[in-house]
Image (cartoon, rainbow, N blue to C red; front, top):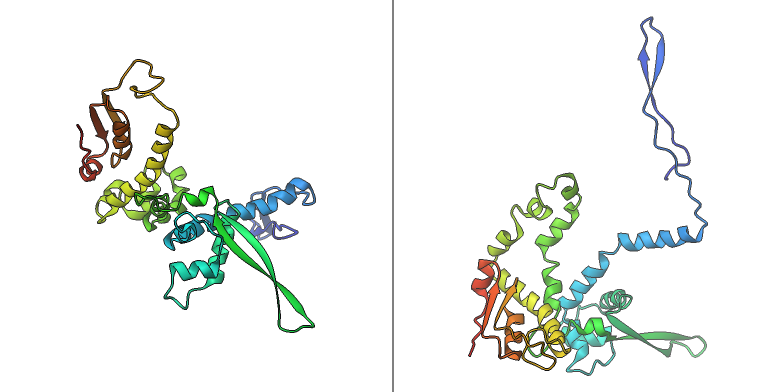
Length: 290
């Protein structure tokens, strides 16, 4: 509550005999009295601030991906902790106006969410022997979450997925989420962009390819984990139940990456069908078979 007192207004009207009378307005909402000294309330205040500013996290992640920070730190597997200035020298070597301090702010935001690990190394620095000061140097390496943003040998990473989900047309729709409650007949994306997502995307050059790359960056690592983790539901390997799959359908298979990986692993699968939207299948690369 912003004010200690809530004053109820009234309207003065002329009575039948020229006398004025007061017409009360609808009763105001009940005043909520909250004890701000309780531990639960003390936790609630910073929590709501965090939620209100949560947009800073995906936006910081989006910026880090655009700047190729993960690849710079990873550097062929070394994952050597680097300062913001050192990272800048790798990603923007010919940009003297690039700001290391702003990059460090992005790195620190994502450090708090487990994307980076911050290494602190205090070093003494002084302008006078009588008044030494201590400067803390911050260096950053990749945590497991951050490593998902590193481009692999196939040119894939989760980074393209991050970029796809923060494109302007999607960001315009999010502030209209409340309209889906008020009127569910028109989805927020249509309100923001004038037509449904797949129709809209189909008119943008290269959008379908971008979406397929984004999905490949997510599905290929997942399928590597499935196939390398002992799963044998397709038959033909150790622990086989005796049922061998010969025809496999991938529903919503996008570019067909999962289907291709499974068929390469299991020779018993003679036919693979990538079932998706016509415009998606039309752009999917062919999967050669035996």
